[in-house]
Image 1 (cartoon, rainbow, N blue to C red):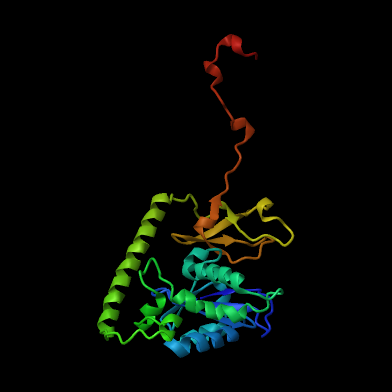
Image 2 (image 1 turned 60 degrees about the horizontal axis):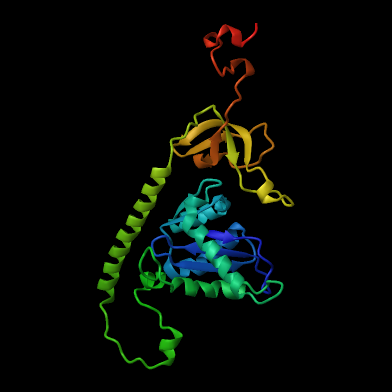
Length: 290
């Protein structure tokens, strides 16, 4: 689950776009909303997702959906709630990527000069995304969810005759197994490539580190801004890929648990009396003066 915030107020008063992506099939659902409060998000989820497919097994989202109200909704529906680490969008990569795709698609279709008609196209564009061929799954998300392909406008207007019936259940089972192995193979390939490039970090408890933040204050040029902030002291290593920073006595207000990829060790400057470029005893006597 992800959202596109701070959009221009549409003619219907919507300013947010909520996006849900099924990790198994890639099926996407979008819902325009006037706010992003916990109750509004829960109502949108119930209308757009729950009424069509029932309760989800698990919902992955960022830290913005961690309110008590949303926890109660997940507990009542028997859903697991998984929040990603702060400043780690890769953990919710499918939804983050879909947000970029939907944003680019909306930019192509809006006709209003003030960009207030974006919600008229956002939800319609999901049909085009769900009926597009997925290279990883080798099938369209629509077919993987429903077990049949939707009729296009061409098929609806032209008489193509009756087609032979298919054993939908058997075909759906075979495709499900195929998708499972294709997705697992793609995940293993990406993991292997990542491990080949990865290097072991030198961060431990008590060490000082820099924190990478890609946020820039309004009015500052991103290309000229410094992205590494700090230094911060590592309070503890939460696990093998996350650390808790000590943000007390600092002007920063941020979530203390961050991914290790956003950190780099602070390299202390060597004192001047410890700098030796050569051994003076090995030099000839006439090459230096006392």
